[in-house]
Length: 225
Length: 177
Picture 1 (tube, rainbow over the protein chains, first blue to last red):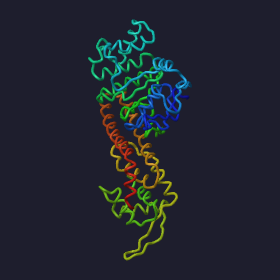
Picture 2: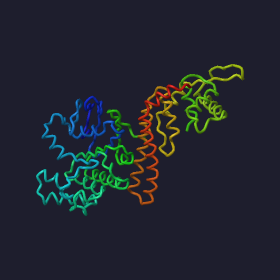
Picture 3: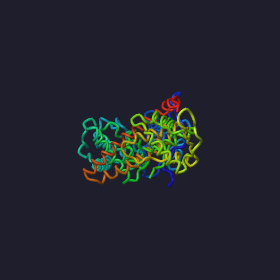
Picture 4: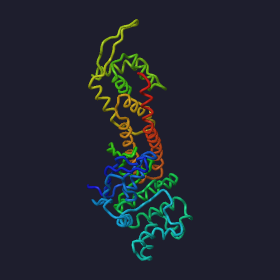
């Protein structure tokens, strides 16, 4: 099967320090890929380049056979809104909006009417078992609830790729596992690929395969059976 | 932990007699459990029988004469295969994994490869446990969690070792034997 999203030989430096030094990754539709590696190995930089948030100094990122670098900023932002979803460790929900409005936000930005957007948002909150906090603001929810709301917001637009950067980093084991279970199940059901950056093996165990980033270079190890 | 493979790995540097091998083994790997002479000679005669080592002359000195053993090509292939094969992921593997990493460094092979192969095997088992957990009842979940936490501890140790390979490599180069 061909790649939905691929990065080839990426290089990226911040000042004199190289963060990526020849990293690559191929993601197929519907698969969950864990990107592992020690802190500072470049795994988050790789994710940001794949998502078109950062532009690599050298190398190619292709989504559906189109090079991200050939697209204008506007088109790239549009792509991120329509085809990509994001879950971060924290700080991604708008504090002034209710959880329901937060989940509806990407749909509203896409031009959907409030009623339709909120009805779809509610479906996703139900699916992630947090419909009860729909009227609350993110600050009034627990860490685990807030993170499920964030997952709902990432998936509500029906993205082809979900980028998750340490999505359980701020949660205890039990909440972290539930979030991973809900995220990967929902992604499989909608055939969305997930690029999961994590340094935790128990989180990576929810993936289909792993890629290890070390000193800015990535390495894929064939699963041993 | 495979003593045979470890002795073969130590023989890659050059032929040695049994006593010398025991000393090299104890110095590097025998912290808790030094080898008995009996173990060394039983293992060597098994390796000899299987064609993985060959006799390489006799060393005569003040004491009794001592046979020297050399690794054969088949022996080198055997070590190579052992280093390249993941251990069955289960708790308390540290001893074997540590030995593999040190032998890889000693012989100029890639210790990163040893670690990566093992990580992949561990994660493979962790995936199976995670799937079993998702479909099992609470008792299944608790049993799987126990195994998952142990495997995770092993993996964290692997990651730490990977991060310290440079240091370990320098230290090993400083030790003779």
